[in-house]
Length: 246
Image (cartoon, rainbow, N blue to C red; front, side, top):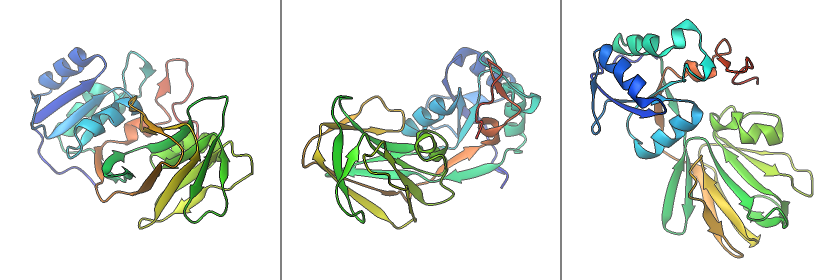
């Protein structure tokens, strides 16, 4: 649906912030550092993920950098800001994953990844609903939005709804799991060491033998405006290749 909300207060994050801030002011927006109505994410998917960690409840507007890409006219920064001011950007709700480790909880817009801590050793895990022990390089839990990345590189497919679990380089061939909105996956690390990563957060969590965690869909959903700017196949990378060839 279209974004009917009237937007005045804008917070800018990402690379080339000074350029984006100047363009936003020229478009008539008031720049703020707190209580924004929309967060302008000036960059790519990684900028959107970082902004979602800090500004959970605020709609995000992703715009790629013109200095690093060949953007089509409607996805360039001035056009995106004009469309935002006119309430013409499509509004989408994206699901998030909820990761629980003990009493702590994290949200992921893209994916939750369990990896072996050292390439010299595999990680062994047990998953609820999966018979036997799984041995390999780890697991990838992905939302539909996040399944276009690491999850797809393993499975060669995407998740249309709910969330998916990919088995990364497992010793036995295993089809990915497709899970619904009420499903929860309990995982026990039976042989580590391993690490847990949430989206592109560099602060990974160490997992040792006997450690457990749970992944499910979160009730909190992210609101993104103009997501077509990240999906556009006419916008190209600086080397001329498509951003999302799948």
